[in-house]
Image (cartoon, rainbow over all chains, first blue to last red):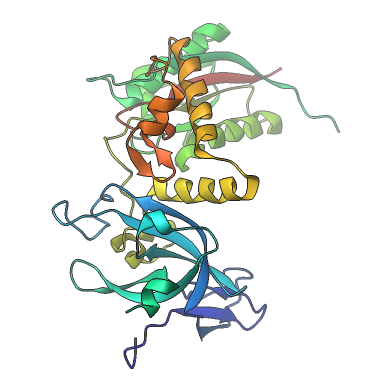
Amino acid sequence: MSSGITRLVGGQCKACSAVMFPLRRRCAACASSQVARKLLPSRGTLWTYTVQRFMPPSPPYRGTTETFTPFGVGYVQLDDIVRVESRLVGDPETFRIGMALQLVPLLDVDGEPIYAFAPVHEETSK
Amino acid sequence: MSEPAVAIVGIGLHPFGRHEGVSGLEMGAHAVRLALQDAGLRWSDVQFAAGGSSSSGNADTMVADLGATGVPFLNVHNGCATGGSALVSVYNALVSGACDVGVVVGFDKHPRGAFAERPEDWSLPAWYGTAGLMVTTQFFGMKIRRYMHDHGIEAPTLAKVASKAFRNAANNENAWRRRPLSEDEILDARMVSDPLTQYMCVLRAKVAPRWSCAAASI
């Protein structure tokens, strides 16, 4: 995060051009060690989704039964270059495959930054 | 070059279910004894064994129950594919000519609730777990959602599949849940990871799939 703008940092392989998220030391496609940081697009479309109805086992999940509320999870297609798994913000009843999404910052219960995607119409109405 | 013929010559199964006071390893050993009986073999005839569980211990320690014959016993730890991987291991040992009689065993007994896995053990960053993404049912919910989208399938079809499984279980004395469930009961059950309800998922409350087979090259 910088200048208050949230971006996802992935990687792009210099050998085979594959884009990956999260950033890894070696290319997820060809195992080359020549992977450069790449800022990923902040908009995408929903490829698939579900709703996490029960509190995930903790650890590893950072949360408490007192504060837990179900949340959306999905795979978001960023242009045609990479698909990322992400928390989803918004009403799960409105989620549809193919809907436009926008990257948004999200804090976990300890105030640590994680990321999420939200429907674009919600973002623009703020 | 013709491959040596390999055949499964005996099978054994411990019933699925909640069996308080019986360990996963004990259930596995029970299944091995049944498989040997089925094949007309003794444990001392076995030249190679492979098996494993996800959270019920090391298969090779079953020799405490079966007999310390000195048999090489390979522990396999490969998630849901543990039994299948053990089977392939014994098959390859038989085909190679390294042994003539082998035993395969898969077993498990889980605590209630979802798997609690460390992301680091799966080549994933720690934040993947803290953010709440390290949940098996999420993966299957998202996978079936995309499949339904691509193939024009609706939730009632998933209920038909689950209902069929419960109907079959009603006739299987080794099944845990033997009460048939209607499609409506399945659809109306507690949602776990949309679109999957409780009865579309494996009921993990200490259900222990345990099976064994004795295989031999003939």
